Image (cartoon, rainbow, N blue to C red; front, side, top):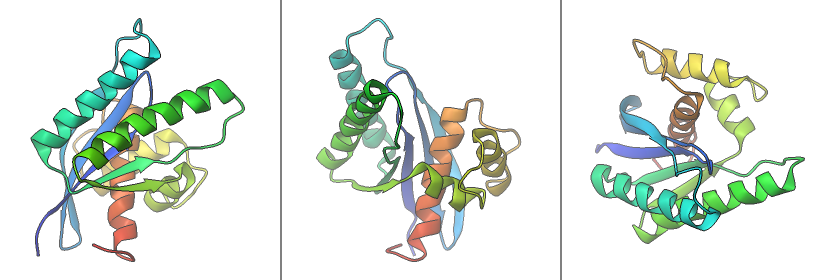
Length: 163
């Protein structure tokens, strides 16, 4: 049985969180994590290019076999939802161009998978990520803990799919 490396992505045009997990035989281990922050002063086009190139670098360095990314959610602010969709598109394109399989999970699905409650708060997700992976301390940002939770959701779902 080989290790399955997953990069979890919590997309955002301001801050994108990522978490890289290794799974083998029902056990998962946190490998790496961080955030990608495009320069706020840049145009949307340059920020999307930045997200794309930074995720390409992560894929090249860590060689995940799966990208798990948060799916779109409904928002009252149409402009924000469209901008998030553009960020997701750039991130997914980076994975597809590297021949990485992509799985998309709705925010409620991620919360249900990790916390057991689809309406859980980001802080509850952060707490459960810390507990599940037996981390000494919680990830320093909610963007990171959300990304790790998205990767964990892949492993939880893969039991029923294709792992």
